[in-house]
Image (cartoon, rainbow, N blue to C red; front, side, top):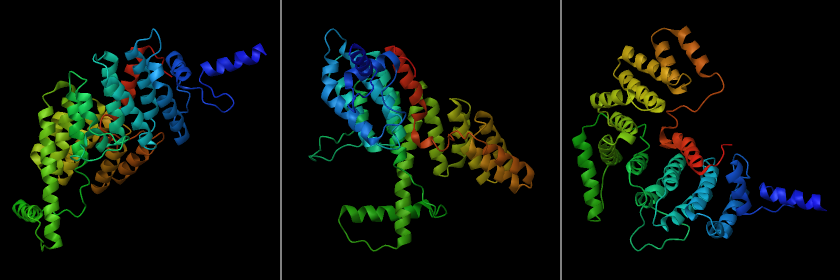
Length: 385
């Protein structure tokens, strides 16, 4: 009998289900603190998120109020577990994950003092949210006098701004959220039409909208108005990134994104200058993407020698980058080097295939999420799994 009871007690401490019952939040967090194990698999199912949400709502306040414990540390431990789970759910079950992220953020805002662990948590949370591409959660504001459901959260970045001394990363996150809303570029956009014509069509649409007039306009001119509206948004966002380049922590990312937006605006000389600067600084992600987009610009200008050099520079940074490899292979084939092109394609498709930085560009600083969560866990003394 003692053996059975000891086994049950051990199972509870380790966060293992007993007789089909979840162990509860407090044993789960005790296990997490000691071993870094969440008690769930690598990717949480909807049922797992239901379990974790129920546990946090029921026992979260009790965990924070345990006798003799530092509330701020208790909260950071809980927040770390939530981010560990949420980082694997940016592509599915995100609505469940963000509910708990905001619950943790709300608890932090009730404390007057901001700890170093809390600062680490906010940076990690931003990376995870950006990975989910949840622009509304990051920066959307409610309509005036609008009724808000209890589970509707808005302008998370404003909450974070109020907790951090240095808001460089929140400013970058807000600019990236604005950038994300400027997509997609339409394949049928006519970049040969004069800007004055686009602006005129845009002004006509805005005038009619302001005075509630019925507007008779061809589909082509409506397309011009839409294109000009998007260009205004892209220019405003490019200005945000240009202003952020003076902040050392985010300078490299801001420079890269300003260069990409200038490329989208077809501001070719400016785009090449800014992308060249980005390619000389920042981490491997920044250098790869900057060289890749610079190559696209140069290829579009029919400067194939310079474009090839940029593609190869990108591949020196990320040897398994499929986007640069495929574009370079196409360029090699175009210039008659078919054998080299085939070899390039074969090498690019060798497994394992890591995510290409160009494909993860839209995920903001999600590439930093793993290290940011790890830094938080180190500060709390939580072992790495």
